[in-house]
Image (cartoon, rainbow, N blue to C red; front, side):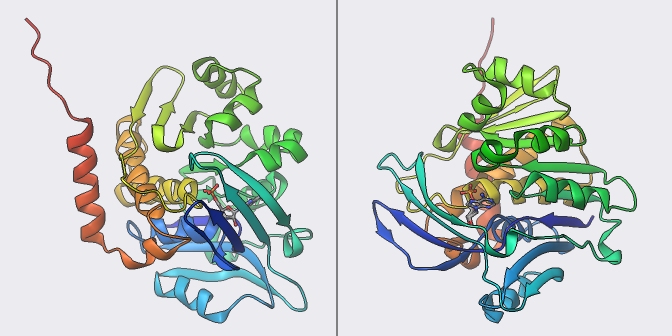
Length: 307
Ligand code: AMP
């Protein structure tokens, strides 16, 4: 099944306790596509970059079977830029700079051939742009997943709530779930958020795993305990890419299969954090992914004999 991905394609500058990068290629849609490419070869990208964005990076996406027909390249403009610094715990970070540049006037155009994509991943971006993409679909996708962050909640909470009415799965982190719901308890927060319209909610808790909720059930997936976390940038997006990529591959959106998708997403996120930026996602292969999934299976599997 095909997946339409919308989100940022960006330059990032990252600082962690282990080092610092100059401008490197990042962006939510970049991580989502790289991660999802391990599960499906039908990836359609809608995004925008400036004239300063390197051709090799676009070629890198094409090499991963990403169709870049929907990637606008704006003459004379600059690519979205984000810079962040991680605290020692590597779970929290400060955004040092966000330069919207091409995003400021971004009018997404979904090419005709993409308008019937079966799965839609609304990656982190202005909620109004996410909604515009959804509105251009010729038929309602089988599954719509939306990812967002505090930055957009601070600026456009009303637009976000409007978009949420049409979403099947919302993925956010624990702090964002608290901000969106106004509740500290994540279980109470989930109940409030599910009333906003999304049918499922995934709360990502960094090294503490992820929770999947619907109105009746809850599932918990651990994060793989890693000896070294080098750079968490893109972990959430790699999670989303693995999640939707697996669902598209299996073409099954039942809650049972979503549990497996959460494990696949967690496996992809665990690779992403092992090196700076997209580096690790670019060097692994499908066998690496399969053996990591096996590690998750043995990590979380137990058998309790009851009398
Ligand atoms: P994650 O670590 O999964 O939250 O994603 C990090 C990626 O999100 C980086 O590559 C950034 O370029 C991108 N990013 C940071 N801030 C924003 C924002 N406000 N909107 C969209 N993408 C963003």
